[in-house]
Image (tube, rainbow, N blue to C red):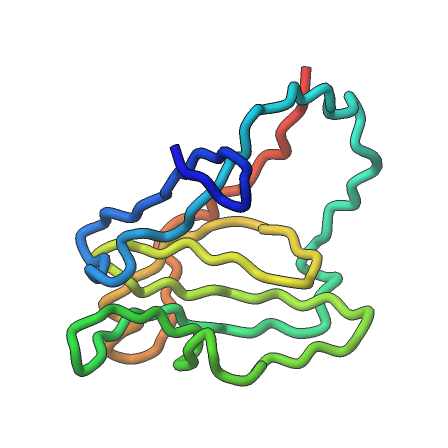
Length: 156
């Protein structure tokens, strides 16, 4: 239990313990929950509204973006999207009101990294296995199997 500005709070730390986590980044996030806790009376609506499924033929452009992992001079891991770090300038500019397909080519083989996007509406169309070693040698994207289609979840 900790004391901050006269209020009691409890600290919860989220950690990462994957095989390639750098010692400096094992603690990912800290939540400080103030006491006393209040009862949450909110609820989710049964129906969230219309959802328009996007199709491939609606896309104006398809981009291939690689997701790789490198090590810096101190041995710390860093993930790069299309060769750029998260602190680099914005590299993908999209015309307002258009639809694009982004194929995220995740070639991190020791611990594939999930990806998330900020400040944009998007839908995941599918996931599709590909030949990673062929891509690393030739930059040819050879899709091995049928796409793993995502099935919309329904709430009962």
